[in-house]
Image (cartoon, rainbow, N blue to C red; front, top):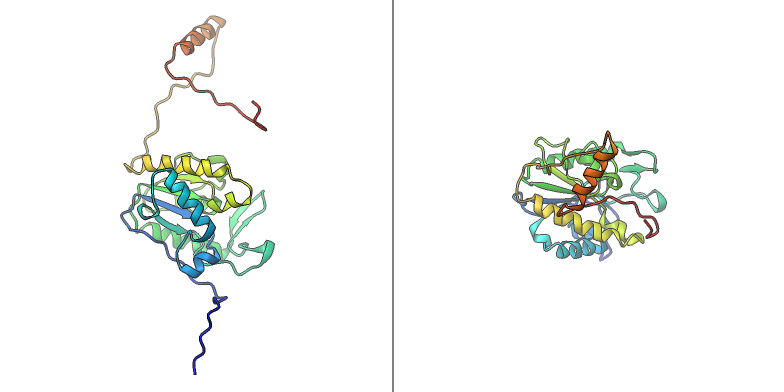
Length: 232
């Protein structure tokens, strides 16, 4: 007699990517959640709901993008040690464990079979698996180039949707902005940088005044400012 349990199995399973190999946008998350493990679909549960709302805000739906994770099975470690079997981030160093490196290599092999024009790296592990960078906070929204794939593909780092569940609600606005940028970049495979003229040294006061007059008459002018606690 075979007895079938209705309780979910404690053994983690491999959760494959979902989408078409012709999708022009790929979103790579970091960890497989218990929700992903039950449905065998990445970005399920709360993180998936957040991603879906961000996609809608950028005028996209899940069916238009390819979804996958770096670590395709849920962690086996409890509590504060969760996920350290794949990835270590103590604030000073970020690196893959031996098992995490296996997952990262499998991700590269998966993406090499696809034909995206842009990849959204949602979280530090995703960014590390695709480029030589290791901090989304430093490069968020910047259009990088993959260094781990067989061909160069544009990579846009953004925050993990799961991070917005831990009090970082404002990160959702950043995710939406990055998805909108990815949507624009997905129209073509080339990396096209905007042309800029950098002026940083002036020899005389008169030259400074000339440039101030030039800036006053600019049709568009932008400044980079730093804000702490809503104060400039």
